[in-house]
Structure formats: structure tokens, C-alpha cells
Length: 494
Image 1 (cartoon, helix red, strand yellow):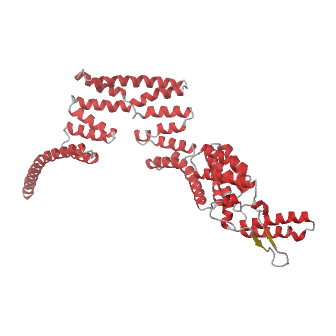
Image 2 (spheres, rainbow, N blue to C red):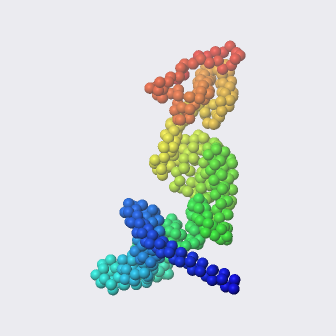
Image 3 (tube, helix red, strand yellow):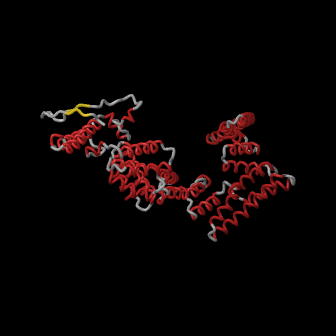
């Protein structure tokens, strides 16, 4: 008996709770309707103001509040389209049509999206339904004509591809893609055709959008990564293979390629860091390691050779630089930087005519490069100077000789050509001339300011260069090159 009482009491309590819940739901529905209207109004205002993300948020709330209102789906679809999210718009348009089968505006909009996606059969159904409802609808009629053009063009393009007329297929697909830009199949087909004709850049341009046009398109990311890699663009290659691994970190093909690209990228980045730090020997080692890591792709060998050429030139290893730069130039004859670096090596080797020739060719390839322009002017001055008086040659030292090496060479030659060492008048006059040149060379090359002018292709002791310069080297000069001995000279420098 007690158990029956508890059972009845439980039933009454449940009924009472159910009534409360129903009251709450009814009250909530009334409030929800007002809220839906408020969200729709706010969405309309924000959409008119161009605040699309904020408008979308209100349309989400409106759909949640009234899931059976076809207009809320249609309006949200319009915002998705304005945001470029056509795939999100499509389900909303379909839902609006399900709720109201004769809603032709939604059918027309859905047909347009389907046509752009390349779903011509489904698009045709929508356009024909619009024309059945409204035979004078010009947009639907025009879209049906475009749809037929897409089908004809795609069929002809596939036939051209099958008979290996890749250029013809590319031309036909241009119009197809113009009308159906969101069709990944068509873009992949044209990308393949570009690969066959050797245009890798355009193949990449067509393939790239397909990563967004398909869900989980790991195959496209991997193919893009390999294409960029084959073009010598290791940064882009690494970026794309990482996108593949984001979709599936266990993808074996992507991970295998990632390891290869990552290793090469690290070597090249490390090498460039060494170049920035002027650690040229270390940089050369890294570039050589990169060529061993990837011996097949010519783009990386060309790049490594060019950078090794640069490092050798910068580290003043003239003979090696000229040899490597010449090989790099043969591999990449349109690269002005290789010619620039080889020209600098020629200057180090005192081959000024060759330096001028390389700088001139580099300027033809890149006429806006200030470094090349300045290098050409310097090489021309050095060539002109070498035909007159070359202070480095007078002392027999290299252009990168330090001050101690200059003084050492001067003392040796001064002893050799001291006029006291000669007896006849002719020999003495020749010795005096050589002795003065040796002393002048020593004075110029041990003076930082004058040596800088020499390295820039100027003769600081040439009266022509001193005119209007505000600087005048005091000649005649007196010198006594030896601390011992009674011989003293005073010469006029001519």
C-alpha cells in the first residue's frame, strides 16, 4: 500500500514537472520568435554596412532560433557567398529549396554555384526548373547556354589530351575554367597539360586552388611540394608538405618527402647564415653538402655553385673563384650575380679587361643593379690606371697585401734599386726613376685614404685626379729609406 502511494506521488510529480517544462517551452518559443526577428534585422543592417562576419553570426542565431524558415537559410547563404564560402552556401540553398520547392531565387543561385563547381547535370536541373516556372527568365536561359559550352569544351579538351595535343587542350580549358572556376577536375587536367609542355610555374598555379576545392587534398599538397622542389623552391616545397602532414601526420609519402626537403632546407639556411656572418669556408662546406643531399635537381646545383663562387670571391681566393664562377656561369648564363662575383675575382687577379667585360655583361642582364654599375666604373678606372701606373705591381704585391707585406716588399726593392748600387750615369738615372716609383708606391699603399682611392680605380698622385678634389699630396717629398748610411735624396715626382 505504501509502495502504491509512492508510485502515484511520483507520477503526479512527473506530470507537474512536465507541465512546468511545457510552460517554459511555450514562453521560450514566443521569446525566440522575437529574438529571431531581431537577429534578422541586425544581420540585414550589418550586411548593408559590409560587416559580413558579424552579419553571419546573427544569421546563425536566426537559423538556430527558427530552423523551418526558408528565408533565414537563403539570407545566410547570401552572406556565405559574399565571404567567398560557396561550399557553405550550397547546403543552405538546398535547405531553403527543401522547405519551399517553388523558391526560384534559391534554385537560380544554387544552379550558378553548381555551374561554377562543374556540376553541370545538377545545375541544368535547377536552371530548367526556373525556366519552367518563369519562361522569360533571361539569366537562367543564358546560364543554360554557358553550361552547354562548358560540356562541349571539356569533352573537346579531354579528347585533345588523349591524343597528346596538350597545347590544344590548354586553349580549350581556358574558357571552361572561366565558366567553372571551382571545378578541381578541370584545373587538375590543365595542370597536367602544363607539366607535359614543361611549364611548371603554370602547372603549380592551376594545382594550388585544388587544395581548397577538395577536402583533405593531401595528394595535391604532395604534388605541389614535389613541383616546387624540382624548381629549386625548397621553402615553398616545405610549406606544402607540412600542410599535407597537418591533414594526416602519418601519411607515409608526405613524411618521406618532408624528411628530404627538411634536410636540404637546413643545409641551405645554415649556409646562408654563414655567408651573412662572413664565414665563407663554413658556408662553402654547407653548399657542397647540399649538392650531395640533392644530386639530381639541377636547380640546387646551380644555386650552390653560384653561392660558392660568391664565397670564394669574397674570401679573395681569386683563382678558385674564377674557376667555380666560370662553371656556375655555364650552368646559369643569365645570372648577373655570377658575372659580378667573377669580375671581382678578376680584379683580385689584376685582370682588369676581363673584369670590365664581366661587369658589362652583368649590367646588360640587370641594368638597375647599383652594385654592378659601381663595379663596372671601378673596373674601368682600374683598367685605365693599370695602363699608367700600378702601385701593387711596382712593389710586386697582391691587392689584398697588408701594410707589413707592403713595407717588407718596399725595403727589399729599395735596397735593390738604391742609386748608390750603380756606377754609370745611365744605370744611376734608371735606378733613380725606379727608386722614386718604389718609394711612391710605399707611401700610397701604406696610407689608408690613398690606398682606398687606388682600389677605387683612381691614382691619388695623378695631378688630373687632384684637380678640384680639395686634397693635394705634397710632392716633391723627402725620404731617407735607411737609418744608416750617408746617402740622402730629394726627388721631384713627375
